Image 1 (cartoon, rainbow, N blue to C red):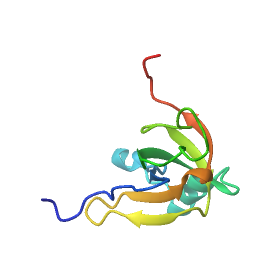
Image 2 (tube, rainbow, N blue to C red):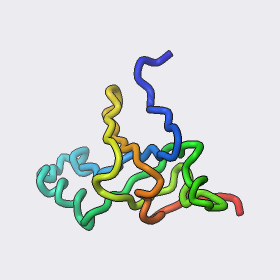
Image 3 (cartoon, one colour):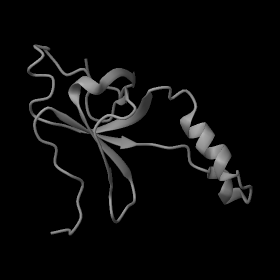
Image 4 (cartoon, helix red, strand yellow):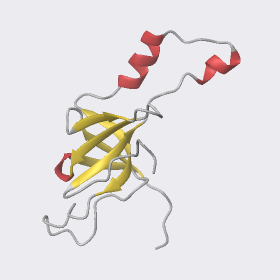
Length: 115
C-alpha cells in the first residue's frame, strides 16, 4: 500500500487537478521570470479557475435531477475560484481542489467519447 494516494471522493463532490502554465522554455535555457508566469497563470481568472476533472463522487449531479453528469473525468472545466478545499499531493506536489458539484460553471474541453 502506498503511503500517499490521491483522495477518494465521496458524496456530491468532484476532485479537480489544477493545471498551470509550465515554464517549458527553461529546458531550452531560456528562463521566464516567475512574476510573468504567475500573471499568465492568472490571466482571465476573474472569479473562476480551470482544472481537469479527476474523479466524480457517486452522488454528484444526482440530486439535481440531471439525466447525466455535466462533466466527466478528463474534462476541463471552469469552476468558482475560491470553491472547495485545496490539496497538494505530498509526493508529486500536484495541486488538487475538492469542489461541490454546484461550483462547476462550464465545460471548456472534453475528451473524445463514443457517441
